[in-house]
Image (cartoon, rainbow, N blue to C red; front, side):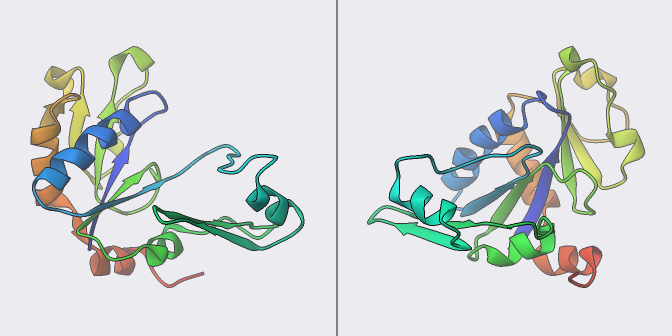
Length: 176
């Protein structure tokens, strides 16, 4: 497995870019998984569903399965947020894991930048950024640069720069 992050400020287009990269990488024969960091409370379940009843009754984990998919919900119940190392260990083997968010983590990243956000580029201050996808490529110095809509070029970049899982695990250090 190889891992690469897509990092940028909120509203830069990370999710949109990932939604373009997955089919492009899949078309090339690669299997893809993703990890998305949420800075806010989120729910994949809702009142009225049996799984919601199980979870709100106090179950630590609820696994919902059908003939098409399964989802495992794990309630932290006050425990610390799991780190990236732990989350990666939960995934089944694939060719590439695309990680959205996790800016401070030491994984290799492609910065996603949109000028209308009014935020500065991250790459000058983050040596883990290996390329930039932006609507202002003329403003990037010293790194491979892509238009935000260039899924083919960015997929080439993913294939070139994604780091092996073992190397990332070494960078992340021992489990907490």
